[in-house]
Length: 218
Image 1 (spheres, one colour):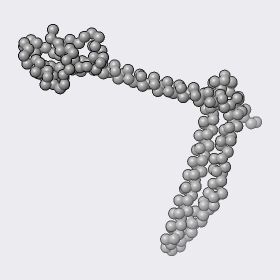
Image 2 (spheres, one colour):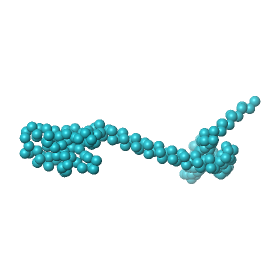
Image 3 (cartoon, one colour):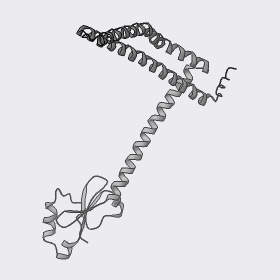
Image 4 (cartoon, helix red, strand yellow):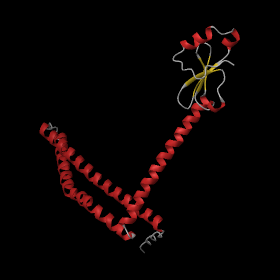
């Protein structure tokens, strides 16, 4: 058996040099390029059994690649993916444990969670409600400007540029006010959902039963 195990070769030229003086039968043989546990590259006709599950490449006498060990590459990919998945899962479990401890350290019953939710909601609720008077005023102004424009159009009169500009400015202001109000309302909904999730988790950790649903009014 011809082997070059233990020899470091860089590039394809050294293989051609090594096989140039070999018998025809030896030259016709296929070779394998494989790597040991130290990262050293070896060339041989047969891969030692303990290294067959490592990266290896089948090459011809000119050093051209004939076949790669795809099974190894796939196995390595699967191993890497599994390791990555476990790392993410461990990190998630650690973070969940931290949140669970903080939840139990913060509240002693569900009523305290409801109270914290209401306190958190209070400010954005006040802000959302504070937009109402201004929104009503701006809506009225938009309606008045539109009515004025329609009256001019019906009368066959030109619409002043100032009126068009004012309408655009007021409508833009109305859009901004509505967007701000909707953002506050979305914030309130997110707060409700967050505290609802905390309450559900608190029940899981403490084993307390869920509160009964309110019966419909007669």
